Amino acid sequence: MQLGAFSVSLAVKDLVKSRTFYEALGFTAYAGTEEHNYLIMKNGDTLIGLFHGMFEGAMLTFNPGWDQSAGNVDPFEDVRDIKARLKDAGLEVTQEQGGEDGPASFVVIDPDGVPVLIDQHR
Image 1: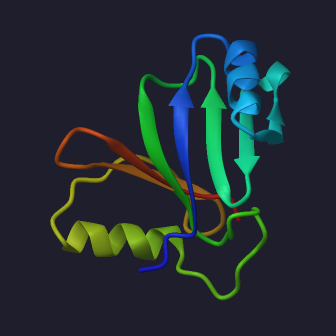
Image 2 (image 1 turned 45 degrees about the vertical axis):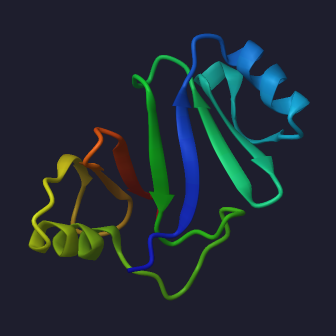
């Protein structure tokens, strides 16, 4: 199963303070804007998403169809195929969004309660 680009998504209390903190660790803003309440920070191939007011806690995020620089990967395993395989494996799928093709997402929860977001953008 090819899950695509990996990042950790963090719910932050103060986007500016979090940006400053991660910049001190060598990250730079790669995508998103403070006006839209999120930033994707990049340090080499490592990605961290900072999100204000969008969800609680932290989650693991995978983006099928993207590499670590958000470049398109072809071919790639469609999010709906991944979802079907996980359901067949007995995992509970929640927060499903999207149609029969194109962008779509869903969440599975690991045994310790950590949400895992599978979020396809194309």
